[in-house]
Picture (cartoon, one colour):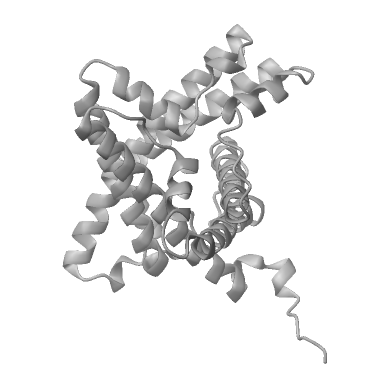
Length: 278
C-alpha cells in the first residue's frame, strides 16, 4: 500500500500539518519544562536552602511522577517537535525576517534554540530508558570540546556575544510587546489577552536575565580559556541566588520563568506559526 506523501512536506515544511502539530505539542512540552524550572527554583528561594534547577532537573521531576516513563517519552517527542520547528524557522524563514544582519542573527538564535531543545529531548529519552548519567559536565563539556578546535576560543566568545544578543532581544520584545505579532490576538477574549501579555512580558524579561548571565559567562570562559567558567540555566539561577538580595531576585526570576511556561501553553493555541513566538 502506497502512503501518499506531499512534496510540500519537504519543499515547504512550514506548511505541513504534521510539522505544525509537532510545533504546537512542542510549545506545551517547553511550557511544562519552564513551569517546573521556575517552580523548583521558587521552592529553593522560599525555603532558603537547596539547589536551583535547570532543564535537566525539571525533566527528572517529570520522570518521578506516576507513569513517568511514558510522560518522559511524550515530553521528549514534544521537545523534538519544538526543535524541528525552530530549525524550520531558521532555514525556511516563513516569518520573512530576511538575510540582513538583524534577520541572520534572529535565525541563528532560532537554530541554537532548536539544538538546545533537541539536547533536552535526548535527556528525556535517556531518563525514560533508565540511563541517568547525572549532569555530565553540561555546558562546560561542549564548551571544552569547542575550545579544542581551531579558533575554538573565538567561537566560544562569539557564542557568548550571540547569547547576550538574544537576551537583549528578549527584553526588548517584552518592553515593546513585539510578541503580539506572533499571536492570533483576535481569537483571544479580553481576559485571555490580558493574561497572555502579562505572562509573556514577565517571562521574556526573566529569560533575558538568565541568558545575559549565560552569555557573559561564555565570554569570560573564552577569555580565560577555561570551560569551567561557562554556565547553564541552572548555574545562571544559582548566580542570581548568590547575588545581593539574591532571595528576592531569585523569586522574581523564577516566577518569571513560570510565567514564560504559561505563555508557551497559550502559544499552543494562539501562535500563528509563521513567526517564532519567542
